Length: 286
Image 1 (cartoon, one colour):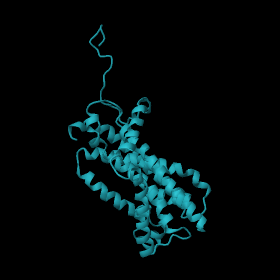
Image 2 (image 1 turned 30 degrees about the horizontal axis):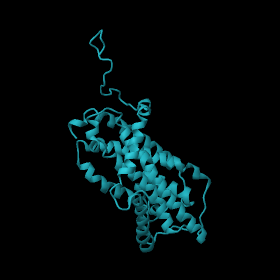
Image 3 (image 1 turned 45 degrees about the vertical axis):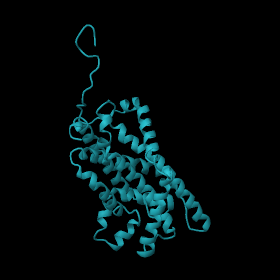
C-alpha cells in the first residue's frame, strides 16, 4: 500500500466497457497463451496408446465411411476428383472448425478452478484452443497432400489453381467463427447445462448442412426446396471454397464468402460481448 494514503496502488475490477478486446493485455500474457497451447497439444492424447496418430486415423476412417455410403451407395458424383480425396478435403477443413468449437464451448466449466484463483485475460483460454488446433490441421493437411500426390501419379485429373494462396484466409475465418460460437455457447453453458448435451448433436447435424460430403450444386439441383438451408449456412461456402482451392472442383462464390465473413464478424462480436459479461459473475453459477 502507499505509505501516504489508504489508496491501493493497483486494483483489479471487472471490465465495465460494453465491448472489450484488449490486444495489449493479451500480448503481455503471450507466455501464458503459449503455455496453454502446449498443454492442449500434449495432454489431449497423453494417456492414449496411439497418441497423435488419432489425428490421422479419424479423418481417414471418416473419409472411407463417407466414400462407401455417399459415393458408392448413394451415388454422389464428384466429377474427375476421386471420391475419397473429395471427402478427405472436406473433412480436413471441417475438423478444424469442430475442434475449435468443441474446445472453446466448455471454457468456463473446464477452467473454473483456474479462473477462480488467478487473474489473466480469460479470452486467452479459448484463443489457445484455436492456435493449438492449427497443429492438428497441419498434420491432417500433410496426409491430404500425401493422398493428393498418390492420386496425381495414379492418373487422376487433379490441378491446383491460383486461388490456393487464399486458403490461410479460410482457416482464419473458420478459427474466428469457431471462437465466436464457442464463446457464446460457453457463456450459456454456465447457466444452462443442456447446451453442452445438445452440442454434439448440433455439430453432427450442422455437418450434413455444410456440404462436407457433397457439392453445393448437387443439393440445389436434387432438393431445390431445401437448398436454401445450405445456402444460408456460412460454413458451406468455406467448405466449397476450400475444395475449389485444393482440388479445383466447385466454385468460389464472392457473394457467399462476403456473407460468410459478415456472419463471422457478427458472431465474433456477440461472442466477445457475452463472454466478457459472463466472466464477471460465472463463478457463482458454474
